[in-house]
Image (tube, rainbow, N blue to C red; front, side):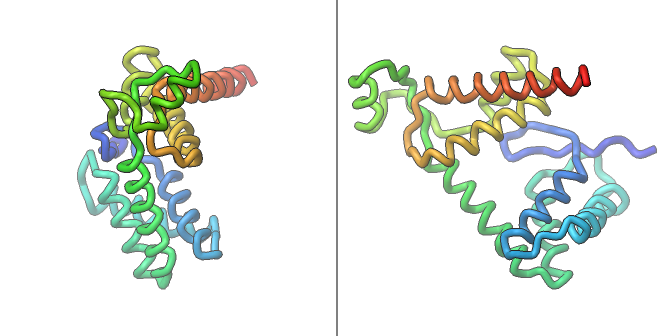
Length: 192
């Protein structure tokens, strides 16, 4: 039996390859052009998974390689517009990540808010979802898979806010809230 393929994320993290994640990515790309189809997404994801396990013959693959394979599979099966939409979505997310900074500010009053809106404070850092993952794993003992889920939830909220400079206190609150929600859901599933 072949061992579980590992995916090297852009931030250097490593996680197990999930066929369902590829399937979801393909279906989302099809959905962006008005043709979401779970059955088709599953069939196309099967092609990617088969290649990775039977032709690639590696134990690790970069997430960027998987993205490229998904785009090739979409394009070669007549879904060039979905491949283009996937590329556009990917680049939009990269731009958002590059444009957001986290300022070491604990917003408690108007003067803190003014500091934030005037460009933040010294020590600003670029937004990095991986930092949340590492903190949850190293300091809280949360599994890497759960930590990635939480970090992704937080990132979606951060992107939705449209702020260029995020106070670190707000990021901490978002992480705490989403951590509580995910851990509660995991406990509920374990006792169901």
